[in-house]
Amino acid sequence: MSESPRSIAETDPALPSGADQERFAGYGVMGLPFTSGHYLAFRHFAASSVGPGYESVWHRDPAGEWVIYSSVSPAMSCARYYGSALADARVTNIAVTWLGPYSLTVEIPDVLDWSIELGRSAATAAMTGLGGVMPAALWRSPAVLSMMSRVAGPALGVGRVRLSGAAPNGQWFRTNPKMLWTVEDSAARLDGVDIGPPGPLAEQTKLGDFWLPQRGMFAVGQAYFEQYDAARHTPAGSGS
Image (cartoon, rainbow, N blue to C red; front, side, top):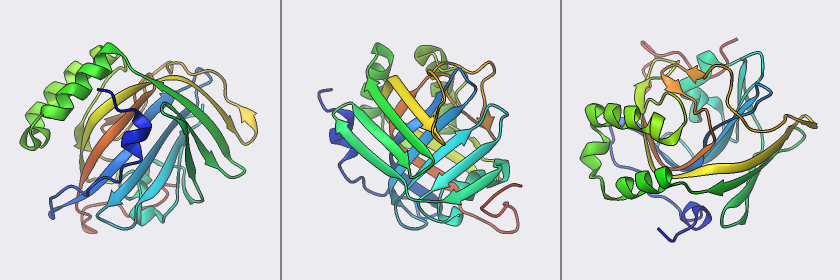
């Protein structure tokens, strides 16, 4: 595939169909661990069925506490599904800037300055090729997603993977990462302090059934969640 992550990311995605579920389309770093115990992830969902498109940054500190920063309110962003597992959910400006076909920065004013260099491996190229030809019906199949999860973990070297399951607030989720690249290099300053080199955590972390990868992965794709039901699901926002 000759297209770069930047060329694909800068094309506005269509909102997936499925009026009986909450839907998102876009790209982001699924997760990136640091040897210091910090963990970062970000999402740029240009298309959303629950509100305007948005950016979010997920941060886990070495003590294991999560904060999600988002450019829109928690009720319209990732905290809608993960809020009960967070120490805080904060609304702020987030800037995602592409510097080249494979390089970008993610910035939160006075909080985070994060640079990311992407690359491709044989495994990500193979999975991207599969994602491009797999029919939509298979992406909706729990059995197919379970099989893909079991294969993806060892193939990509990311530890455990679950492409479907339950989010901390109680909704089911289904993720369809249709294009993948590796994070080849990255540096981040949090509150003005360098958080050190990327590297796997001593123990893989997760939020609900969603396992965060043990090496940096960048994905373009879609995410689906169960429609919010106040009688069964935890409200969006902070869990503390």
